[in-house]
Length: 604
Image (cartoon, rainbow, N blue to C red):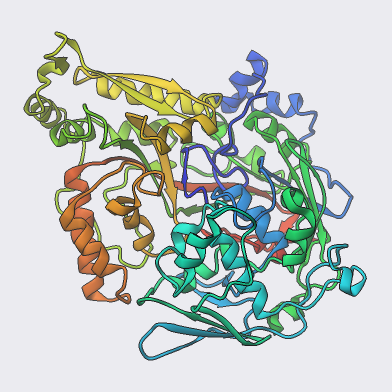
């Protein structure tokens, strides 16, 4: 998932607007802005502005759940690493494994596989049996069956993994399979040549002894493989669809998932309807009649004020809560205000597996070689003030690995806090006493690259960050970008400092610690281009070890090294806050919610 992403993200899942850039935001009238900016006494004015009475919101009456969506570029599971795209793919496509909707801690259960795989004693070979009777949705691409969707086979998974490896496809998920599966890197090298990629070229580590048996052979132990196989990169894609539709394939999804795409107007709305012959994957799911909703309608509404008003009007069943709306929704104890509660609204809160940070480009001649400078900036960050600004929805992390994942070992030794005296001393040690740049005789200026510039909360919090740094004499100059430009600067190592967050792809410390592994430098997931020989050695040991005390100790040491070297300035770990109308039943927050809409239903 855009596993590295700007801090603005996840509309219907978090207390924030959609994470993609917003180009058409309109500011609400000043009176309405005042009512939404936390003046509880004016909540009734907001309700009037929304055209609502104090009674519960009306039902849309169309048999659909209405939710907030975000802009996506298409439906190709090999492409895109952002949350919104991954969530959309999972409504249409499925993989071998999925997350259990109910289980905490998170665990995997079979999806298109009959069961969890058989694993060889050396941990290198995984054997899956594919479920019988699973069919792709009907589509003209299946000419051999007159457009009727054919049954899924082991070969579909081999083809899909080859697509991720195909250099011409330029999948954002290659990082998860690179140097892992026997023969797959050689396939990738061959795919970079002139002419079409030969998908019939054998890959030693991907074999199908029969149509229902898939074998994956690894080069070395990869304990995270099952987590990776639950990601969208490993979803089953029919070769017929890719070859028939070519460049148009991302707009013509053909999957096995619980829903099919019924309509898509980019930047406006997406509509999904029940897959007419989707097969429940477990007896309990069959008994529950999954998927429970006949239709899902996702409205691409970027402006959080508009989302809020649509929610009050009963035209949305769930939204996140932004900072501007917080005090209109919650009282000083953090409880829903009676005016909101009477409307049948429930607030659902859960910690996220997300770490927000300011990244320093280690190739930059100013911040890269100067560890004391990076440490000074970290100690100047006022975590309490930052949390207050965000209404208590964000806490400062003490580790690059969040609590709640395998390998988390608690706060690392040397964890950073807020201490201006220490920050000033480190700044002097860095050669910038009082914030003065000795080369110019003027204050040190640093450029901070930002995406999602049209979100007021992003601009306001960036200004607050600049105020923190101003206290030690450092000037932070924001540089606002559209999303493609922002990531291009980072990939080309042109950004001096940048603001991002990382959301777990799977609940394991390795998924975070890989972000500091030297060989993963840009354009890979190590966005800061950080390199530390000791760290790299530890990482190479840790990534092949099963979860356990020895591995956790290695993770702790690696987190300690990162905190000391400070390629990241850790600024936030959010709490997800979702408002849910009573009409949306059986909703549970989930850190990996891909395909979970099949469990939701409209309350009777």
